Image (tube, rainbow, N blue to C red; front, side):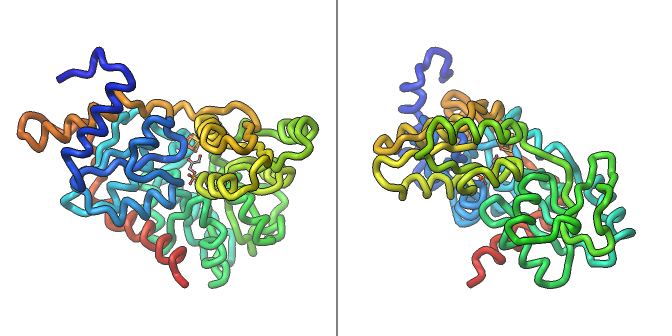
Length: 357
Ligand code: 13P
Ligand code: SF4
């Protein structure tokens, strides 16, 4: 069976029926930035943290992951040996995750260790590949996501350790400010392995890699000021991958799940301006029609849109063929065995810190 002449409605119907046939053997997680049709048929949708936890608790034998590659990679790390992770579109990557690798992270930590008197622990944002996560696991560090970065940073600082935070400079910078770390102790680490001038390197607390998300870096102060002028009654909420000045001019910031929850709980008739990925903002606007929801600026993630009903249906079909013994799994995700153990340690460390009472 080929899906060549299938309309979106037919593809959706196929996936829904295949899900019934496969029952608990199949799970489809979808990130909040994925298109509405896929979110509607997904078993669970959420931010990066929620998806990691949901996947780690799922016993489904086949997980068709609708998100970008680092998310499918992370799911594979957390999965049991009998679980197969499929990523319907392997070309859906994330430029931020590609802004560093294990070897460079290791060089950065070595370099910082030579100038800083404090112990340096690497802390990696979820938006990274398994090699970076494995490096953190190997060095006693952890993974964090935008919903828990503050808690995890505090965990290490409270133990007298300093952090090499990578790859997202802006998230690290925003967290450092939330915690109240003096700016002289927050140091940018250039991608050519240089340290920011004029900082107290000896006592530095957060060393931040100069990575960024091209989608959120699009937002600037003028965008916030313009929306404030045009919609004086609106509350402005942005994702913390946005620049610190943008976060400061806004009313609040949060992960995709926190943004979703905030709008869901808000009063009827309230007005919201949201600074994050466009597909998600549109879905929130369509879901909560009793509120007025506007994008801070149009900024779609070119990678998340690569996940479609068609490539997801093809992945699901390959699961059915595989079970019937008539075909192989399409775009199954594999992670280098040498990386899995330490990457899992770093992901589990995050979950343990977050779920600790
Ligand atoms: P969340 O963890 O908030 O879902 O963020 C993931 C992401 O890629 C944002 O750009
Ligand atoms: Fe990566 Fe930015 Fe897309 Fe998130 S929105 S997946 S950080 S490019």
